[in-house]
Image (cartoon, rainbow, N blue to C red; front, side):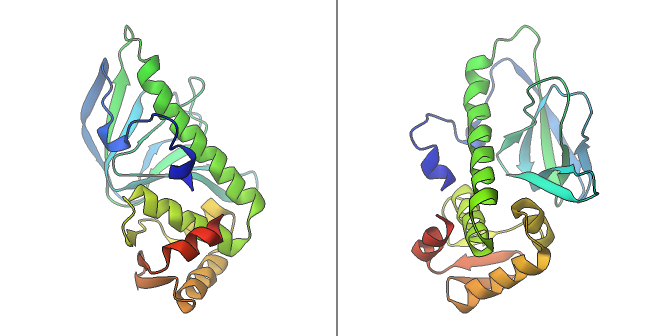
Length: 210
């Protein structure tokens, strides 16, 4: 899925990100549910997740929430095309964030471009998942993505709730829960806990998510 799409692009691993000319601040702690920045606020610095997880979302006109991205430990977020944040960013659980400010005199375009491209590819893949796939295919694609982002391990930790997953995939919480149960009953995954699963049939999950 996502990792296969970017395999031919030379992108740094998020955990290895180091931006020459950037001024990294000490790690700030955000309790679960705490806002990191709000839609409409002035943009500028980047944000690196040291531990925990972040959801990026927008509130729709009817009050519903649409999550556009999740960011895990080692990943960078906060890129904007202009000087304003167009989404909210919020800590999912206890999260450590390092703010990285770009020095005014630094030309960092070559370093920032790969990170921006990686975010763009993830956004494009997210749109494809929302537009083309049914519920079980969406959840399968999501789990494959989470697996790849955690090093391809069989056991995957999901810091986000079923509601978060639903708001990310355009599904109700009830539908997400039913799909998890169906995948368990088919022997594709094992539910180790509310937010921890084991992938039993990786190939089957890949086929479902394509």
